[in-house]
Image 1 (cartoon, rainbow, N blue to C red):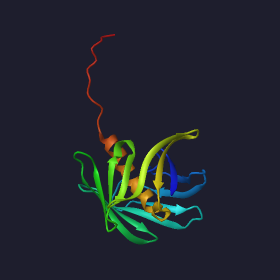
Image 2: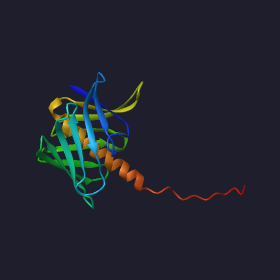
Image 3: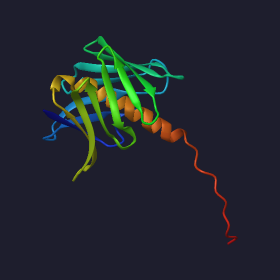
Image 4: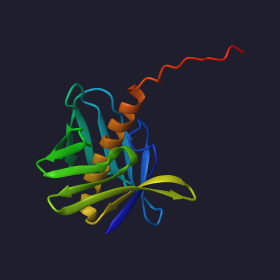
Length: 171
């Protein structure tokens, strides 16, 4: 079983994101950007080899992302519905994502087998997302899925307008 740590709010940003293991060693580097159709986030090993990438294939209603591992398409991720909670499905892999997406506490399953568990932790160096992945070979795709979920979450939150309020005092 492997744990991977990603500093909070860095996962889906258009910046370089370093993914570390439980001993603090840098394992992966994620680079790229989101926002328009065709945008890509790429996950590299620290030696510079491309391990996985995720490509945004549609931006409008029913946004979809294609997942690639070593240049081979392994799945397509799409949000299925959001009532009473969000539910995501990765075609071809037959993985589902369920849980509290908004608080980064969710799991990825293949039927009854847990593929990944996402949680949060506070370490002396800051706040982190913790990805608990039993099979290390699933780590690149799980990290890409977590980046999409993070992107959807923060994109949704930035689109919300501040509530309108009246100021009653006249000072």
